[in-house]
Amino acid sequence: MEHRVEKDSLGEVRVPADAYYGASTQRAVENFPVSGVSMPAIFLKNLALIKQVAARVNRDLGLLDEAVATAIDTVCQEIQDGKLADQFPVDVFQTGSGTSTNMNMNEVIASRANELLTGKKGGREPVHPNDHVNLGQSSNDVIPTALHVSTVVAVRDRLVPGLEELAMALWEKALAFENIGKIGRTHLQDAVPIKLGDEFAGYTYQVQKGVARATNVTHELAELPLGGTAVGNGLNTHPEFAEKVIARLAEHTGFPFRKAQNHFEAQGARDAAVAASGLLKTVAVSLTKIANDIRWLGSGPRSGLGEIRLPAVQPGSSIMPGKVNPVIPEAVIQAAAQVIGNDTVITLAGKGGHFELNAMQPVMVHNLHQSIQLLTNAADIFTQRCIRGIGADQEKCLGTIENSLALATYLVPDLGYDKSAEIAHRAYTEGKTVEAVVREEGALPTERIDTIFSQFQKEEQRRSV
Image (cartoon, rainbow, N blue to C red; front, side, top):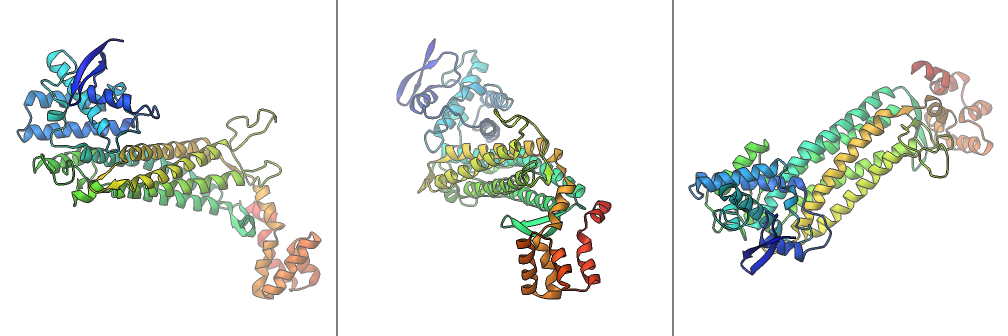
């Protein structure tokens, strides 16, 4: 492999000749061969957006030459368009401030800008990665700013629409099943009758609350640390720089980002990211509950509950012919479990702040974006490959009511709790229905028994469906 020599403050470094990055990035590649996982693409694109807007503001403030600013602007747009994506090899598990990724971005932009201006990539003239691309910034304020901006964009543009579509699919099933009676369950035991549509309406509202929680993620991240530079006091940045950059970021993204009220809090702590992760975890818990219920309701098909029929998307066994498993709910549950695990790491990373800097930011970036991606994709496959194809087994649903001992609950207003419990116990031990025992004992007038139990007759319910 051919190489070229790049320099930084520590000396000379051999860099692949075709690479746009420079010495700092190469050192990071050699220092951090930990996971083979690079920073998320959406994070890098939004970091490039911040660099682009910063160059424009610095030009307007008279701090950057027009030609240099234009070249930086052009390269930043190329990165946002998906070009140069292979030029960001730095591992997630790196310096805790994300300085290696910030310098990776600075070097790629400077190198490509120099190529545009001189025909030769690399070097530090006429565009310098620190003096020009990083002007008015520090890794300590620009990395958390990119974390906030990229997370807001991902949640708003990807996760929220995915959850909204899932909620709509569940609501369509709630309406389709609104007249199908079935037994309710608590503690995995029979409870009083409900409608199958009631369960799906509950799932709908659970996801709708998830949409609200996801939206609150963006509210948590609305304040941006940009302008604090190294420690929060804004050293070496123009006093108008941060507000002007943030105003343009707000205009570009259509989201009301604002400057942090206190830069020492904004850089020393990552509490907003921890809170955002907690909200994502809650969405994951909701999806787990719904997916678990769905696979229980579809269990069987002959020896389980079997009240709903899940779409068959693939064979379920390498040894049992004809077996079909609830693979989509299982995938959703596993994705949700990973999100919950990610939140634990982010919680620990949130504790990684000492004095004026949190030193576990790259892993927070990775985990937040992985959680958003997992929840978005899980919601999508749940909607398209499971929920939309669910059907109801009306016969099975209705059959669970007639034989349920929980129907004794309807006797309590007439007979009291103890007598109703006695009837339920006798029905269970003798293998009879509650209605049969009540009639045998003559515990209530025939007309009253008819009134209580007629609502649970199969034929009458079929006619109402």
